[in-house]
Image: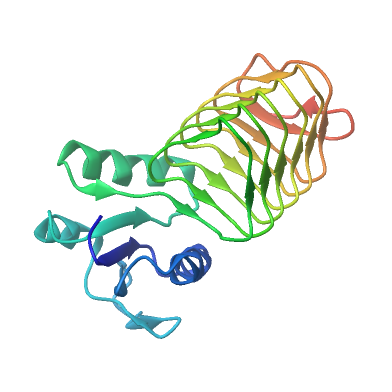
Length: 206
């Protein structure tokens, strides 16, 4: 671990990520990179360059990619990993992490989250505010679990899936990769085809 953290992405999601990093109290300084040249500071923290500038800081700082889009976050983080830059995870001190839980690099676990025992969370995931993940779940890489999502036990969520705010997944349900699930949706059986799903229970609309 280095004494400086650089967060890629200085907009809304980046602000929440920076707040977590500040509360973790592990870095002496925190700064942003952002491709929007009009953003000079965010949350009182300096924007020190663009995304491409990350590679000039190799071996000097820790990195976190604070981009909401699953695809964009994956593209940037995988480049950092490929170039052997040090990507870290950020876990809010108020979250509750159970025994035998694994959390991949580049994943953020936000305020009020509960992750129960023997759950596996991949790299580059967003486990957003007050989400609840019960026991023995498998969350694959670059998944976004939105605020207030409720996931029961023995659930698997495929890579790059996005679960909308307040959605609910019953126990023993598998969701395939590449799904977008609407706000408040309820999933009570497996989803085996990528697409957009909404409703109670969910139906595919795209």
